[in-house]
Length: 433
Image (cartoon, rainbow, N blue to C red; front, side, top):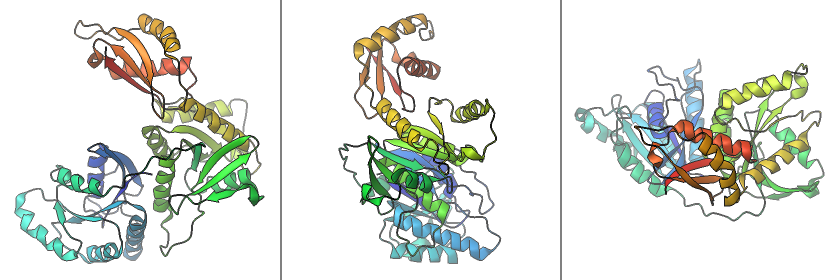
């Protein structure tokens, strides 16, 4: 399970700028208008060898001021429930507002570690003003400028001290998580798989209350299904569905071996799906794309090919991913999803003998060596697979520092072309011989 850091606060205090800095991305749109962050943003970050997921809770655009504040309140409540650490962001230039006070009240009632981050200290003149935020009663304050990044290091040093050490559990059975946006058919496919004959289902309470582990053992398949599709006790939180489902999805994704991303054939692959795909890839999970509601699409003999091509273009450069077309409603190809997930699980665990690796890859490298740089030639002598949860390969050579990104991609494509790694992430390293 991952450690989740949620950034909360009223609109326009600099949450997205901090998110961009932590995840080293430019994904969140930064603007001076409140409520610019409509989409949910989440990405991975790392500090002193500790990986964690960052969520920018963002504002909500709503016509009524009241609705807007309700949405922020809900997100704070969900963050209190789900996140490991909460960063409560405030703005030194405006001081404490009523909405800040209200958020602070909610955070005080929660049991999670809260860091008050006083933003927009772009010069030391405002330092004295920052002390006012001690009156929120949430302990130490951290001053920073999310624009320049000053103060980020001190904040993260203390944040990671609160991370939970997650014990690595040896898991005998594969774990598959079915994830995707609301209403794509996640509940339906789980019901279609386990049927109404409930005695074949052993609900094993998950480590978190929000994802239920179902032991599936039928038709020769034996695995754990992590169900995120709403089997959950309703809390007092009037659920802010999209935000909540993202929190829940990330936890399921990080627990799974293979992530089954379900999309709606009518809507196609949307930005949120691509986000989930890259998160799965970064976490070195196996991936299967399931296109559901295929019965609603008018088809000719080229439809599937065109649809697949569009998906692969959006997922580039990692496009070696199996795509299954289903109609859960018509019970079409539901078991095929599990067969493909099993295959991806096997690919992710695949070990290639060193002799075979060298026999196939060395002649390819000889024919297409890395381009020379400053008159220096890279000579690759030997290849071996390194032990890991997903396929990792070390290429031993004389000048690893001269191998550039395009050649890494070329090598990965050759490994995929010559060995069965569909749906599995591959890591390639060049090491000093």
